[in-house]
Image (cartoon, rainbow, N blue to C red; front, top):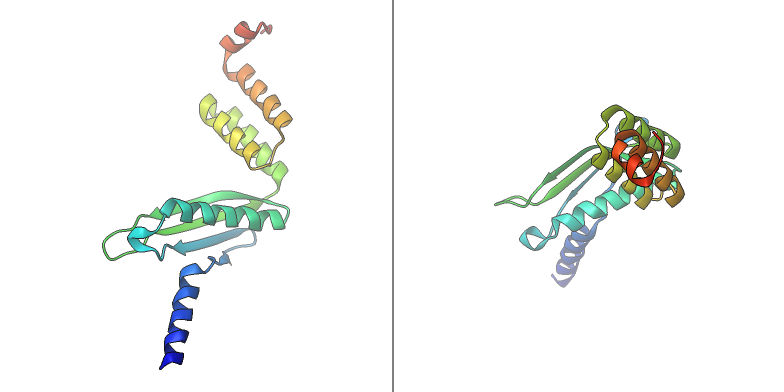
Length: 154
């Protein structure tokens, strides 16, 4: 009886603390799914951050960057656990930079694009110097008023 109890406790502890597995969907696309076993006492934000860190770590091991395809989050509710499903692609870091720059040129939404560039810098995909250069280029291309303020000829 005591042995069965120990086995049951071990199983429960393993299930509660397990790291979500990464499932390959296509050649370069993967998914991580995680449910919060803590119920109403769990931390959905922490769970999401853990999944994102795991994806970034997995990509870094392969010399790539994790690019979000889909992020579904389901909050805890009556009779259900919080859940995160993250689908991501592995891309080359240079491809990620080029995609960000191309996106800036296509959309012209200064604030959103600046946030994206800052995210790339925080994730270590671009250096502080590259961030500053891209930010300057973004300001030059989208904010004529910026050129006037800093004294740069148009």
